Image 1 (cartoon, rainbow over the protein chains, first blue to last red):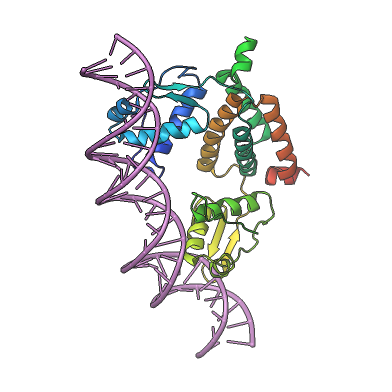
Image 2 (image 1 turned 120 degrees about the horizontal axis):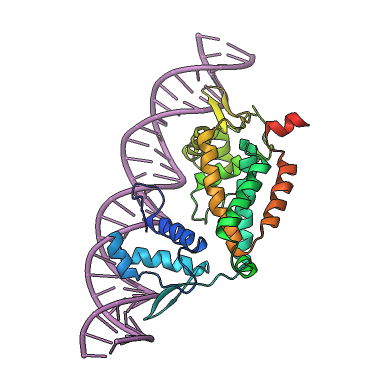
Length: 132
Length: 132
DNA sequence: TAACTGTACTATGAATGATAGTACACTATA
DNA sequence: TATAGTGTACTATCATTCATAGTACAGTTA
């Protein structure tokens, strides 16, 4: 499920955040599905529960999961177009990355292709699910 | 020219890398244009020359600048489609970000628009320059 | 009531980042 | 040829961040 790169310069909790986010976005983890408990995951990955908790807290603050004391942590249902702050942030990051891609010689057409491919696979959240 | 956010969690040298990269990509800094010397920029920004040097070294390893001992550091001419490793890396990052954008409710059409806008502004490197 | 869950805190050590200082190699100019 | 600039690299030190270990509290469920 996870592969942590302890040799990476990237902190362990950040790798967790990214990996879990990916699993949520690609719907490997589905809405309202329970995540492993912080103690359980800590044991599995041989890292400290506080490190897991830090990752879960970050995911919660970004709106990807919710937690209930005594019950566990769960995947938040996708809420397209609700997280304005996050959308702005992702757009800003995308702008920079698109600029860099074009500068490196990746063409606009290639980028269009990427978007079409990913749109097909990921399905674009609830809106696309509802259209099916 | 620069605004460093010393309160940011992001290291100072990384902020420098990003800002200079942006200036290069948007052609505010043009090919073969000389960058401020590490001592001069250090003085301007009131940070340590070694910190500047670290940022310049990173930019050089990513192919954005080149340095000549005794002369200075300069913007590398863009070399579209030459930096395969970098292109792969940017594509990977883009894939993740596009997935996240779609998941958040940003539509494929909006993403197409962003690409067209940026393509117009940035000009897509030498290939586009040569087409004009 | 026990075993699970999340959450938060303190303390400690390792890793990273930034700084200060120094020194060497190169270039250009007067 | 000397000076003033340039990049580059190193050591040492300190601050910050990250991860860990440990502990404890509040909630849920069977």
